[in-house]
Image (cartoon, rainbow, N blue to C red; front, top):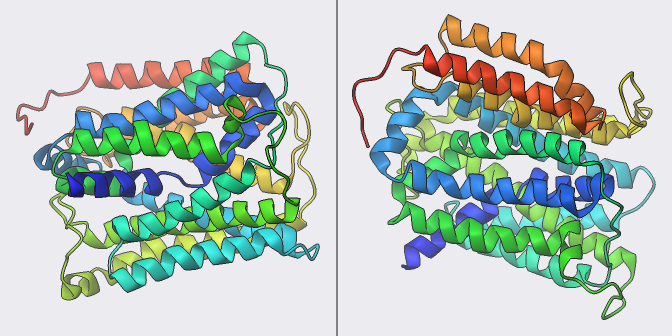
Length: 399
């Protein structure tokens, strides 16, 4: 029971990255609480489903062996995204001499990193330290009641729900840290069920604008905005740093047959995998750091199809989201039921579907005219269905 709860904590914290921490705030700003629920429900259900669908070491190893390349790219983009987010937020405030959020980010990242260093592994102990930072932020943010705008038209809600459904329904399966949990948790369904239906759901409801569901309109106590910014920075830094550490550890533990070593892997095995770490962890981190450090100095972005101009930081943030709403879901859909995910036909389908459906998702997600997400996601689903129906059936079943 204790190991299962440890994995549940690890899962909840490792999935609370800069999408779960920040996207709900943008969605509530743009479409009110209906937009928040369009994010919240698919996210919780999709992440939890991994433990019930894969559910065993054999199934997960077989899946990882086929989807190895998309998973490596998923981890690389995710690491770059976390570092970009922290770099953007810190630089955006530091250039105006605002120190509270950057100081909180630095402190939170330090807590997660030092906890992992002292522990000697990325498991429930640094996850607990990270969660404590989030609890602190959640308590202090009660002093800042979130503003909620009026709802958008139903068509916009349908479009957003469709893209979050495919994104959160498929992307969790490409997460190496999730597959590591499936392969080593005593009961994957229990670990994923508690991790997401309880812990992760609570985190999202406490430290995002989704807390408008339960927090009072009038703050029960007063606290300066500087303290709230510092607390939010603490949450941002700890959670993003833990996600980077979790993906880096899973990358180091990945084996050619799809197995992912447990938390007690020997040092010599990790050393032999360092070249892969440099490619899939260090390079994305450097790229994310550079983009995040430069983007605050760019002008606001206003392109054809945009509902209104958006800041350069949010523009790049939404570009990153395109990997999780378009590229990775398409890659997974066109690979389902096949023995490899990097053959020429699969990559051609990946490119073709992204080119055809991409403009619709550009206007719907980047331009924030969500109704255009409906045809875009429909094209993705049709392409995925055709590829699946025309597959050559795989005889063996390693359930």
